[in-house]
Image 1 (tube, rainbow, N blue to C red):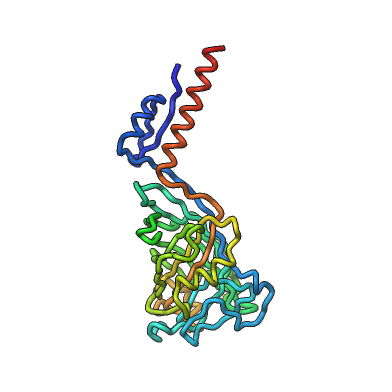
Image 2 (image 1 turned 90 degrees about the vertical axis):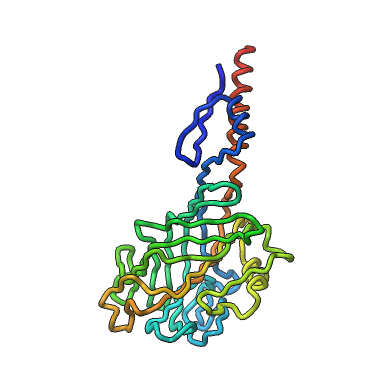
Length: 303
């Protein structure tokens, strides 16, 4: 009797084989499909918890119109330009975001991963009594990629279908679709926590021509973001959405000057304590499982 192992290839086929066959597989160039889901938490600053001043901004912008209410010291924001005519810098409001994001990774060979969002639930605070929450559409996040190699600067990009639920109409619940976006591109970096140290490669961050930070971005990550991360962080996600026109806006918001001509951007800063193994580790796990099974069989035979 031999140990039987199942391997899922990227073609979707499940291969049943013995331990000896797995060892043969190890010497081939076959790519194995590994699926991992990581849950991310939007970062807030512990240094300013409880602060209620409306001028509390941790994202330093060059646009004087980017002001808002940020009592929890969030680093993630949506940036709204209701008129859509103010050029690159015309953000008139910036809801501060707290919440969670889940990304699913499927190995695509080497350092490449296919990425999709499976959950996104952000609470957006515009002011003490005004909220604009961000929620993932059922169609979810689609057709993204992440390159986990340092040479590629850990670049990540994925598209999102989502909507805003604003409280100005008296309802900010998950069923309240006030502003809808389709295939809105999110671009940035998914960096290992271990790389957030002196010597980090120079990274750029310039969404839609707007300089969100007033300092070198790499320095911003090391001096402002890294000290706020939990020590058990494994990866830091930093993405932006360029100023994007929504696909649909509730006509009720027209009185506030919001329409499909309006534009919205985003900055997301989030962390995970979960693991995103290298694609090669799947084969090692399979080999380990097969070897364990084989040893168990051998012991049973001897007894």
